[in-house]
Image (cartoon, rainbow, N blue to C red; front, side, top):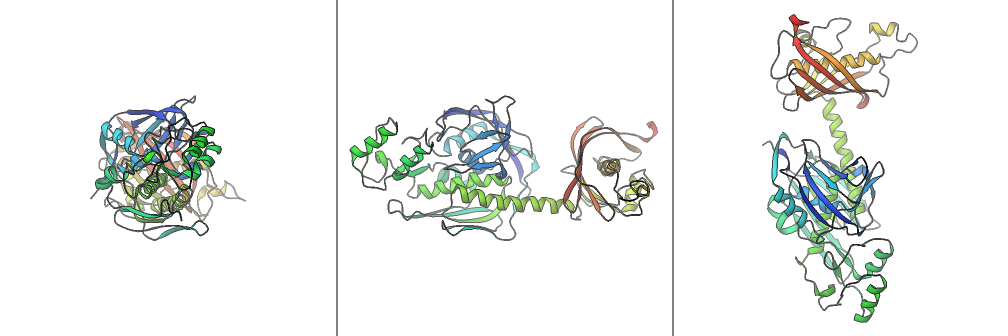
Length: 468
């Protein structure tokens, strides 16, 4: 069954204070187009820079996950991302007027409730799942961390935490169905810390917006009420703090017996959103934290990028349409020495995407003069090869269009990254991104050995042959 991508129905906002920076901020969730993913937008910075929610942009994991892109930062993104992932939303523009989302009550529930209020809107494009087909493991023996992703037909996470601390002990939790369990069993789980950590975290410049109203503080040391009050006053934390009798400051009650383990799972949901794509896998995690989550997410993201390249270059049949050279010559008017596509290996009408290749040999006529002592395929002919591949896509748009020609209007953002030489197989991938009447915009890329060698944005019109 095909499952489509999802965004939200309208823009919604939430204001409050950031957990670690203490800055006042408003987060606004906006609908986003297909294949947009999650991007944070700093509206308080000139130009409103976007920060993609991807693992390669993580720059700090001190008690939260920080993203940085072109000097724009956003701190503590995990609860926001967990809410989006938990509701199985794929595309959302997350606008912030400060450098950290509000902490709210320390859980993902306020964000999830806000997103549900905005409404979930199904889009036309199918979800792009990463299917884990071989185990992926991350281990930190020094910290006792072990995370593994195993093949599974669905998405599941099981977490075990053990801090060797009698105040918490060992706990475990697992989520097996996001739709049924996320909102009631995991979104409400709040962030937590130990009393012995409060002074250290504050001296590190963290938890400036923390309070007993947005975090669970577990009492893990013997201390009198007077000592507790003095410590909080010395840190400038002006709150009425009670030592309590149930092991939690102010006698706050846990929402779940294993709320800390559930919150660790919630953090992991948010951090794994930085893979950039939903997964089909069973995740087993022992003693995870932000550092290990991100290290693991980077390994998984590397696998995803490899699979994308493999998908681009492997030969497969899509929609019953794979062209050999005789098929190509029936559609394109080009002939020797200017026919620069040997085979079409992929055609996906739903995604408006085509992949083909050109075998580059020393017998190409242009190598006689370009250059005799160092043969290099002219860049303009690489563009032509991408253009011809795109032409086959357009001439099959909505069914084969006979008596038509593809005429290119413009070529923009052209980049040549590596030379193409005899013996290379030039793989062209072209995606139609926009149509206006009979005019089309194409994003074209060319690869050799899975490495990008050229790219360009092409604009073309489909016209009658008689009108040429």
